[in-house]
Length: 132
Length: 132
DNA sequence: TCAATTGCGTAATGCTATAACGTGTGCGAT
DNA sequence: ATCGCACACGTTATAGCATTACGCAATTGA
Ligand SMILES: [Zn+2]
Ligand SMILES: [Zn+2]
Ligand SMILES: [Zn+2]
Ligand SMILES: [Zn+2]
Image (cartoon, rainbow over all chains, first blue to last red; front, side, top):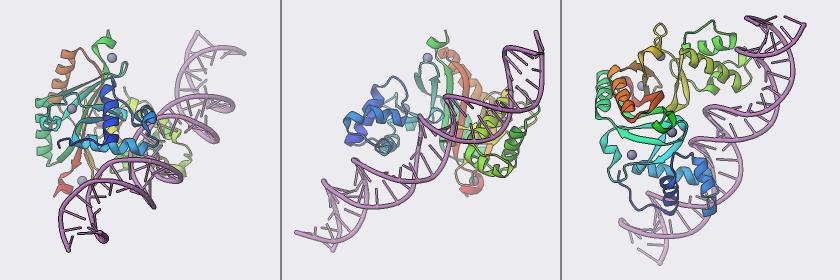
């Protein structure tokens, strides 16, 4: 899914995420956008839905938060499953792909005849800086 | 973490999960246990915390639900990361391990000096029956 | 006996997400 | 033109998930 011109709300939400140095919850985004006219969660969630659909934002399931894609120029979806390492101390997120992991999981689903729609891989822990 | 004798509440929650044919949310568990004296979410969450700690229950982050461990006699934690395939149609969950996936992710974290604490791998889609 | 730990019960609150309603705007088909 | 449709938007209310805070009781172990 390629991203068309963003609407005003979508652009506002995306900018907040792009400028953040870590994942944000929908309600945190809402708070940051109150000065721009946002009043209700749905304004955020509707924008997020589209941004997720366009692949320019990822959802971190394990922490109910959202993050701008770290590879804005590639199409993340085309590289297979995106994986995340999330530092529980400083909040930083590293986004990565691993072809071999994709391959193994695809093998498994093929063997089980399981039709995968969406795969989540999230590693929570401490980044190099925070672990030191 | 090995499971000691469960308390009454822990045993009730565990039994509900063990008898269910799919993952349950904390509030669904609460409803099923009202006849046994449960009145508040915390009674469920406290029991779940312990059951998770003992490794006899897993939390599915992507659907905010809980499931009894499918390998009650092995120690799931000792096998590395547990992965789940979750059918979005019938709700069935298949729990599995893949050493090679673990290995790849461990390689990645070692390379980044990221100290992994908890890794989530969840595949959502359609099981063989539902995909047919 | 005293202190610390653990489990339990209850009420209140906070965080996350969606349902349901209506409005306005752009745009192609008739 | 104007009708119908798709889409974004705004608002209110509600549903669903999880924790904080307080107090009590039983257990353990010094
Ligand atoms: Zn990405
Ligand atoms: Zn960090
Ligand atoms: Zn297990
Ligand atoms: Zn199924």
